[in-house]
Structure formats: structure tokens, C-alpha cells
Length: 401
Image (cartoon, rainbow, N blue to C red; front, side, top):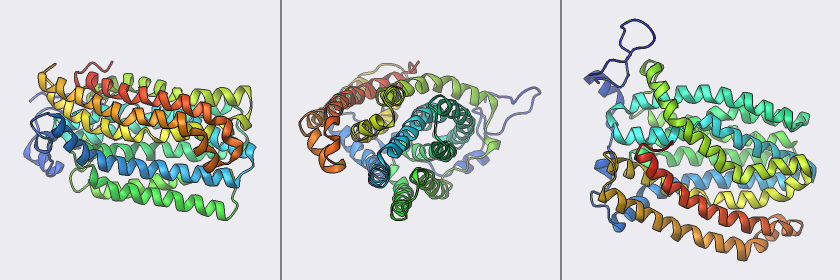
């Protein structure tokens, strides 16, 4: 096999993507390949079956995570003064923009690698976690710069520290879910993710009951991700054993080169929702941020559905398009786009028709003015759902840049 080297000298790096011996294979455990789990015939019926099996679990875990965040958001809205709630929303929105740097687009690239090279999954996961540790540190520095620019209050700086620590926890959670997702067994990740969501809500409810200050509500995020990481790590080690010994500089550089365009794209997508929050904070103050936050949180919550679809179609497209465009790959792409239209357009219509009703009954009459923003963001979400499938196809063809 091909030898890869760590720095100077001729020492072979254990775990580099060259020849994999029996000892290395045994470290990866029994891995189910995409070819064994996805139907061979790529009809719409077969694709729907695959989507139902894998995306159902992804939707459940995503819904639990989004619901936990949304419940804590409502509790914070009820417990905190309007200005303080605006500060909570600004810290959260800023962290969510910077969080993309911590993830660095690695999950989509590693998802493709997991699907294409099942024998090297332990090595891929090891390189992914090391790269995310470095990108999380970079994200924390950028977050500090943004906090200084936005003139965070002392309480907001405490929230900054909590969410900066959560960058790595959240990115590890996504990587572990991605491993099971690539093997079309995302259902394995459900218990750990549900435990994290329950812990997050419980912590937020405790903060509400104790009339705790704003940072306590933000602390629910790292608490939930910490519980999820612990559960997923114990589970995932049954199949793979990631280790720093399985990583190499060459593999890390290759992974970073493939991931950075996706990280940039991810930042741009999040800016659809977040840049307006930052602009409101600078131009109109925290009260305006408080009014806008429910609209973007409601529209953002729906994205877990197309994201779950994306998580299933990427391994499928990576397998069928590995040698370039094909009839099977084209059929799968068209089917995925049809499903994306079917699930996203009704959401856009619902935001336009029922937006004010939902905002008033969930957040109160003072948020009725946010209905127009919700309608606009609802249709932006439809376009984002379609863009995700096009991005999947380009990534599967190694044209993600």
C-alpha cells in the first residue's frame, strides 16, 4: 500500500490511509457498509425507504435537540427582563455563527469518507476529532473578538465562556452521530442524543425555577452536549476506537483542504439568519434582538427535516457518483429534490399564513410584529432545503469547492 509519513524520516504512521492490516481492521470493529444497507435500485420508492429508516432517527435526534433549545429559549423569555433576554439571544446567535468554524465543514467530508472507505472509519474519525479540536480553539478566539466588537456586558461574557467551551463538545457530538449516520444506523445515536436533550431542558427548568441570571440558561447548552458526548462515546467504541495514534499530518491536511469550502458555505448559510441579529444589536439595541429572535428560531427549527434528508442522501450519492455522473446517481438526485420540495414548500406557506398566530400564542401579543420576518425567513428556509441537495450532489462528485 501507499506509505504516508508524519514529518521527516521514514516511520510509517499507524492509521494512515495506506495498507490496512488485520490488527488495524479489528480495531474498527464490525462495520456495515453503505452498499449493504442502502437498496441497490435507486427508485423513488427505494429512496423513500432509506430516508424513512435513517432520516427518521436523524429527525428524532435533531428534533429533540432543537426542541430542548427552544424550550429553554421560552423559559428564558419568561424569566428574564426584555433587555436581558436580548443579551441572551445575542450571545446565542453570535455563538451559532462562530460554531460553524468549530465544525469546519468536516462532518460532510467525513460522512463521504465513512461511506466510501468503511475499513478506515476509525482513522477517519480520529482525524476528524483532532481537526475539530484545533478548529474549536480557533472558533473560541473568533468568538472573543466578536464579543468585544459587540460590547458584551459582564453577564454576556460569562455566557461567552460557557458557549466557547461547548464548541468542542457540540462538534464531537456531531462527529459521533455522523459515524452512525454514514452506516445508515443513525438509530444507534438516539438514546444518547435524547439524554442530552432531557438534561438541557432539566437544567433550563432549574434555572427558571430558581430565578437564575441569564448565564444559567446558556449553561444548559454545554450541559446537554456533555451528557450526549458521554453516551455516544461509550456507544461508538463498540464499533471503532478513535485514537491520536490513528491520525497523521497528511490526512489532517487533506481533510482540512476538503472541508474549508464547506465551512465557508456553512457560515454564509447561517448568515441568512444571524447577520440580521448582529445588525439589529448594533443599530437598534437588545430590545430589537429580543423581538426578532422568536421568528428566526421558529424558521430555523424546521431545517432539521431537510438536514435529516441530506444526511441520508449524501452517503447514497457518494456511493453512486464516486466514478462520476451516472443514471442511478441522477435518479437519486431528482428523487431527493422532489422530496425536498414536498416537505419544505408547505412550511413556507404555513409561515406566511399562520406566523402571527403562532408567535402570539407562544411568545405573547408583543411579538405579533415579528410575523412578517417569520414569513420571509420561512421561504428562505425552502430555498435552503433545495440548496442542500444540490450541495450534496456536488460534494459526492468531489466538486464541493
